[in-house]
Length: 215
Image 1 (tube, rainbow, N blue to C red):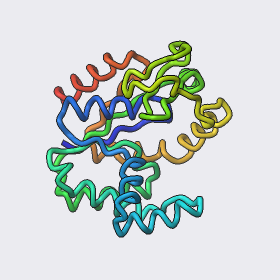
Image 2 (image 1 turned 120 degrees about the horizontal axis):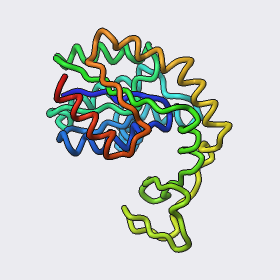
Image 3 (image 1 turned 90 degrees about the vertical axis):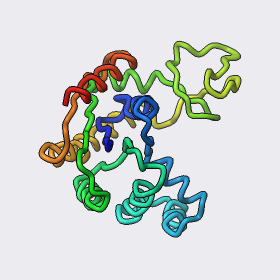
């Protein structure tokens, strides 16, 4: 089973990708995670990426695509995968098409989560992130001596700089200018599943699985 999870920043892609990966027994492929892993493991592509990242530049599509190809063709993804964070442009989508051809992919799902912009801004400006494990909570839930429910760290939550309203609106603009076009690329290629991401996490997951089963 091959899945791309898609949507604007803050719609809950990462959260749903982790849940679905567990429920469907497939790999969750976060492009940020596999990039860091390739750099840490000093693979050939990882070394190239490290040199670019250390200069503060974006990793080119060709290198990122090569890292993704290695992961998707590996043992980890033999039962399938859910791809989170790629593709973000039509050029990346075309590159991914070539990888899927190599994989002899038979059926591709694209799960699109939709949430109104103002709710996204509200979500992101009111979230805190654990600096130990990356777990996210709502700011109102944080109290003195708060213990992270995942890694059990105390007082480890902070607000990221890119969770300011100004930065979020800029990210949304980039999404509509570039990433939104990727959806059009997949309309005739993938099984499209569109979900209201403003529901609670459990209902979003339930609706995804119901639509996948009936497709």
